[in-house]
Amino acid sequence: MTTIDKLISELEHIAENPRYAVADYLSKTGSKVVGVAPVYTPEELVHAAGMLPVGIWGGQNVTLDLAKQYFPAFCNSVVFTCMELALKGTYNQLSAAIIPGMDDTLICLGQNWKAAIKDIPFITLVYPQNRKLSAGVKYLVSELENVKKELEKVCGKEISEEAIFNSIDIYNEHRKTMREFVELAAIHPNSINNVQRSHIIKSAYFMLKEEHTQKVKLINDELKKLPEEKYEGHKIVTTGFILDSKEILEIMESNALRIVGDDIAHETRQFRTDVPRKENALLSIATQWSEIEGCSFAYDPFRIRGKMVAKLAKDRGAEGVVFALLKFCDTEEYDAPILLDDIHDAGLKAVTIEIDQESGSIEQIRTRLQTFAEML
Amino acid sequence: MYTMGLDFGSTASKGVVLKDGKEIVCTAIITSGTGTSGPERVKEKLLKESNLLESDMEAVVVTGYGRMTYQGAKKQISELSCHAKGVHFLVPDVGTVIDIGGQDIKALLLDKNGNLSNFVMNDKCAAGTGRFLDVMAGVLETEVSMLGEISMMSKAPVNISSTCTVFAESEVISHLSAGVNKEDIIAGIHISVAGRVAALAKRVGIKDKVVMVGGVAKNIGVVKAMEDALGKNIEVPKLAQLTGALGAALFAFEALNK
Image (cartoon, rainbow over all chains, first blue to last red; front, top):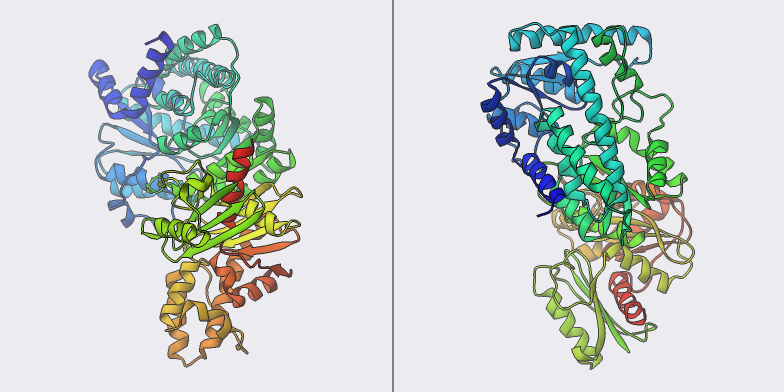
């Protein structure tokens, strides 16, 4: 096994076995773990408190049973599976969960969590949609102050300004490393396949960021040693909320569709925007929200997401775009018509596939992706 | 040179034998789809009726829902690409293809060379599909093949929901209980199907000529309702249920000549 294969395999193992990774952290550090729900959370505060922030984005092929008591049938499956896993005790390693009220469905997840999951305290956080106004930033600072207070109760100590700034630096370094990784993966499409790319990104949700940065930097170093690669298939970019299903990524592989860039909330949107340095740490984190662009959850009167995706595709030499539309995610669905028009106007082909974490049936997705590959 | 195209759908198996990529030698339809004896029977029927042997086929391409499980084909190609290819062969100036099958609705946009430039499919829902009409025919105690003809006698079609097969079924039962004429209920069902399919088709764009294929294209009531919903004339080729298999046979011929 080569050095790069070993590194990738290590991160793949973590991405596929998050419970073991978290258990390992707990046994080694004796510290605590805090769940961070979609889409954005101030992970830096959890990190500064000496705890591990762990992403809770549902899971694949989870059979829904208990969660049906809390949501109507037409709720997106990430929220459903998060609730189901919480109710079944899968998240019992968590000492608290931050669930931001970014849209109506996530607000309901927070409320239902508070009512039903008594052992894992819910920490509320509301991101303002008037995010570019100074009043919006000021409001978010007050929300972050509350999150900080709640986290201090969990960790039992004060979270210092210095510690938060230190965590911001660690997170920005991670973001920079991840941006470099996705660019290197794009020019080495034969060395990094769709599943590996997904696992490398996903593993960051279950590790301390400084440790993940170190591993990914080593992968980047190995990739830099290789010459640029020509891919004998179709290069594509992806957009959407989440696309971590191994089965779907493998269907792309079998149709010679290689991901060379993404605008997925669960992937690149997490590390696309740095936290800027401001006069205090909470203001720095709050300002990042006002600088995020091209995300369906961040109000944008100019609707530039489609243009950003088209530019990404052109910059990376991609022929088309796969829109992984999370079923019943109205926030993403409202973006779809403008997004797809902008992609088509840029002369790119696009296909929409419906993501449902609960469903194991992928034949329709296979047909769509095969047709898309044939069309390219 | 003979090539064979096989289309294993959810409710029927279809096949076409083609000579030199130009001449349709034989066609066959068996009303049993993937996972049944349909795929084998349709192949046997084609060979019997064409007086040809399997070894006479230079290449076989398979498409449809059952394409991935069938052994012995040169290639598996998606039914959307095959329908586009097959329809363009029959109607060279086609712009939009609407295919309503047993459990899928598809709308295809073709460029002037017959290449697929965009497409949409229904999501996991039976509303507007052939299965929807099967369910309704059952409630109405009518053969599904008779729905089109009966609906043409309607004077006042009823309003039926296009959102859900189960809800639509209960609406039909309510209308029957209220003594509404069957022809008006069936015409309402067709308008409901057309409304759903037209909304989907408009997402890819409607470009002349509009061609309808798939088993449901045999239903004149749905075709007329689709014309009203789109405000366009719709052409239905004689081989409307076989365009997927025809496209597959054409792809098989192309593969040999590459």
